[in-house]
Length: 339
Ligand SMILES: [Fe+2]
Image (tube, rainbow, N blue to C red):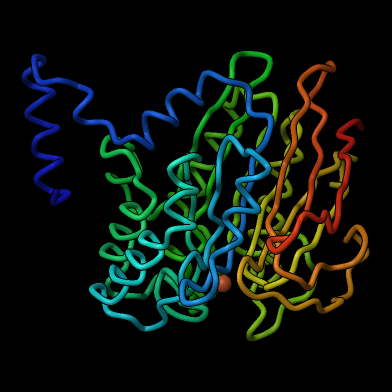
């Protein structure tokens, strides 16, 4: 059904309560609603998925029984595609039997990066960004009544689990508002910063996960290797924000076609972790300098997994980079949020 017609039907339903509410909810949003009551224990995520390549990784991810899948960008490759071409490429992934089977079992949320948004390193100047947003949210089966439809960009926030076992997942949009031409370069844009700061400062969660399509912690960036490091004022603003709250925080990222785990210590002594899972269909391992990376980079096809154990006083969180081709854990890190 055309989305505009669906939204109009939704508005009619709001005015006429006899309209069956169940007709307004997609199966994905139904499953997200059910999940919102349960403690999150296992989350899988990944990025850099060329839809023209073999998609057999979905069966390896499904074996881990994740409660939720998070797309972290470059979910398809549609560089310089028209909106019609981009729609077709999303549809070709959605028609893939392996992916189809996976999303029948696992609810999906996510954000985008340059190659699915528009083009290599694309920023907020892309003229069709609202059309691209609509295609992306339709691909994710985002509920028609989700507030993301009504505001610019694709940034979102979700809460899962009961009080005391609550996980908040904030997904950032690093494309729609990005501006590298101003004197003061901008990555998130002020509207999204206000959203992020409000969400984090008012959070009642026991664990905060932040999805950023671009790597946050790496000190290395250059023309074709993007990251928060190219926006030092905003990287510092994010670190200051995370230091200002007394809650465990994990960053999830993608984009670089390799897997890495980072542990950083903020100036107030608070540890923050980043797990970069980047390379569902293609990956290379380049050892870039970083004092904060834990272990070696993963250069084989992989996905990320976060296991959360709520049985102790605080959440025990394990970060994993796992093979997308076989039953093999490439890298595993037990977090320690104490400081
Ligand atoms: Fe990217």
